[in-house]
Length: 109
Length: 124
Image: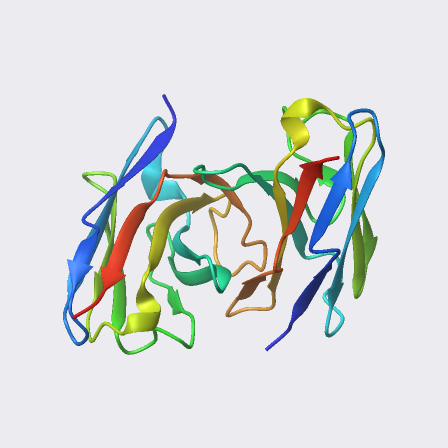
């Protein structure tokens, strides 16, 4: 099974900060990676898919990059509503192998 | 309104059974691959199972294969998860989730719509 390792597990940041979260796959997965945001008591929400495609309606301060094994989610100018937990998710091959990273909690400094 | 609404969660003993349901509205349910994803505080998010739209094709995580069965009723826009031989480690919030996949095979299993989740507790 392909493993996804997210880092850091938590970040303390201030509104206006730039935040970068990384996700590393244990083997090459091309660009089959998505990023989700989850707030307490709510379901995850899709932000980015295919590593770098911003979902319609998601603010442009969110961006994704990477291919192969190393991926990043960047939030430029952090807003108050961005304090949440972020997960990466791979979807590879067929039959599909689907798994999630361990999550990164973005907290207010 | 585009939404998914799960029901059927609750408590069951180890070895017991539960059936989860997910009612979809606001989109053409039969078109899309649907899935179940669960979440626990300890293990995080885990994909459980997925099912093709109108064409056969069901998929399971190794942890539930042979114990869980996914099905759907396209006429009623509902997704189901029959959970048998439940174990303590099946305790989780179970989410119903929609993909953008209309045609299988596809490797793009991204979940663009989620329900609010239903809690399953396996305990004696």
